Length: 217
Length: 204
Image 1 (spheres, one colour):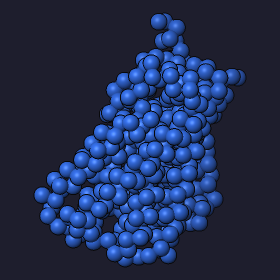
Image 2 (cartoon, chains in turn brown, red):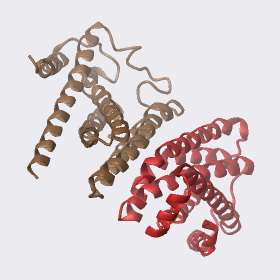
Image 3 (cartoon, one colour):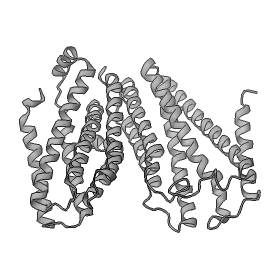
Image 4 (cartoon, helix red, strand yellow):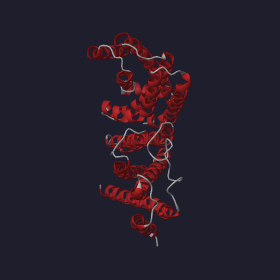
């Protein structure tokens, strides 16, 4: 059973969707049923950060080995991570509409995540602006490492210095303090693992498609 | 070596002064600290981008080979960054003088503002030097430069604008100190990254 993890991903996500929508959740003021979005919005960001982390590891490997395979993996991890980041923005935006009454506010966490997306779009543009494979790989890897450090600054450091509407900041409760009663934990952790496995699956497919294309040429 | 291109420095200074003059013709005197800040930093940002985008562009192929043999990449990035830091801090101070002269200066705590300005300019300079090195390796220089550097500079700018807002309403070093510390830390992080990563760029 080489593909057990793909089946696991499928089962976990099936459980996330069914359990996430049906299992009893604590009723909170303002949040009410929208709290179920926790199973979709939060794992998106976890997945994105996980993918970018893998990408940076492969970029460092590429710099030390000049192996084009590592560069390909780094690129596809970013590609997939950007998709999950966009999904995270969309789910967060919809959630904000129902809880804060607006799709977007001037908030350090929202802006930080949006800027992070900009940095990674810049990475993709940088890649597409060069033709020479070796050069492209090395320069993109350098920028990727830079981008990841900026991601840590944006998502990890700056939000802690400013007040924010977003849960986890400025006196707002975060999810460890209020909502993760045992029922929600049952769905939340499988959801995170499920989404991460799915993302690796997608990235893996992308990498294989790219390799086949290269072979054809 | 950079000093030989003195016309470039004069060009940047003229750029700053004429931008300020355009702003002056539009606004006359600004009392609003918020708008003042926005205008100040936008002009400084664009002149800084203009000033540093040249720093790796001018290297023609033969000269590139010459420098490549002469200097190690580490000493090259350090010297380029230091030069650009000096240049942009200088441009920033000149910018501040002319800006206050023409448009007025609503800043209450000038010492805090200037220390924010110096640290911020140094950070901007090191980001731009590094990005200029990347952009020089690709063909379409100027657009790429802006696209790559602006998102990276945003944490710096956020903090620097926080400092200048605080200075604008008259807070002193007790309140603004923490943000200055953050500015310094961001500078150190960017500079170390550039130092470590630059040899890989250079080895082409």
